[in-house]
Length: 327
Ligand code: PBG
Image (tube, rainbow, N blue to C red; front, side, top):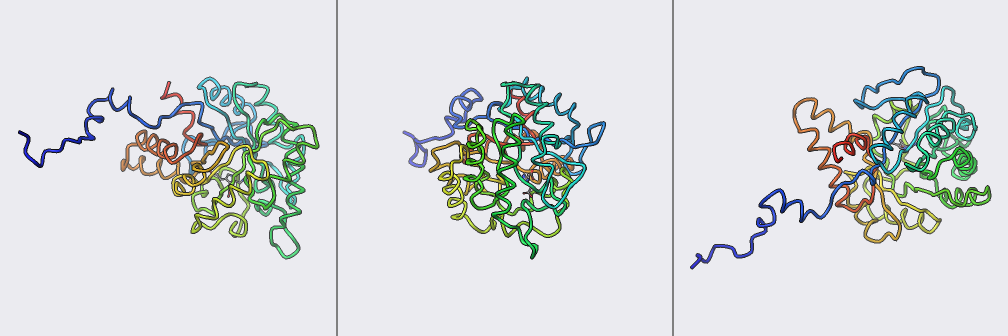
C-alpha cells in the first residue's frame, strides 16, 4: 500500500529523460522563424564593430551581401535591413532616394539571396533625419503625423522598387499602415507585404541600437511610441494596424512585453512577430561576459520564452548563431 501522501499524479514522469522532454516540448525553435536585423553604413570601406553589441557590425554593402548569403545558407526566414546614411537632413531625404544607402543595399541583398530569404527594410525616418525623430517636425518642434505619412508613402515605394518583399513600419505614426498600403498599391506594388510594428513601446532597451545607427536624437519618442505602462493600448494598436491592412503584426521590445505579445497572439488572424531588441541582447552579452549567466542557455531560453508567449517569428541579433546551432 502506498502511504497516503505518495502522489499518484506525477508531472515529473514527462521530465524524466531527454527523449521524453524532447517529445513533450510544446514549443521549439526553427531557423525559418528567425529574422536577423542588419545595419549597412554608407561611406565605410570595412565593417565596424559596435561597442554596445558585441558581434554586431555596421556593414559595407559588400559585407552585407556576404552575411545575407550566410543567413540564407543557415536557413533563416529573413533579414531586416537598417541604413546608416553619410548625410542627414530634416526630411530624411536619403530614405526615398534610389541611391540612398538602404535602397542600394536592398538591391544588392536581393540580388545576392533571391528568394532564399525574405528581404525586409525598416521603414522609418529616424536613421535619415538630422534631428533623429521618426517623422518630420512641425514648426513648433513636434512630430507632424500627417506630413510624415507623405514621407512614408514615398519611402515605401522606393523600398519596394529596390526589391524589399516586406516593409517594417516602425515609426508609430497614426494611419501609417493604411497610407503605405495605398501608396504601394497605387505604384503597382500590391504584392509587397507590410510588417506593422503594431505595439511599439518607448523603451530604454533600444539604447545600443542608437549607436548602431549613429542616432542624432535628443529627447525621446514618447509622443509617438507607447507608454510601457499600457497593456490594453497594445491590443488597440494591433487592431488598428490589422484593419488598415497589416500582413504581420509585431510587438516590440519582446521580453518586457510578453503580456502584450500574448494578448495580440490570442486574437490575431495574421502572424504575430516579436523583436528581441538591442538592449535585450546587450543584457545577455554583458551578464555572460561577467560570468554571471550561461550565454547560450540564456539566449535559447529568451527566444523560447518569446515563442511560448505567442510569437510566430522573432527578430533577433542572435538569429544567425542560433540557426547554426540548431542545424
Ligand atoms: C526605428 C527603430 C528602432 C529600433 C528598430 N526600429 C529605434 C527606436 O525606435 O528608437 C530599435 C531596435 C533595437 O533596439 O534593436 N527605426
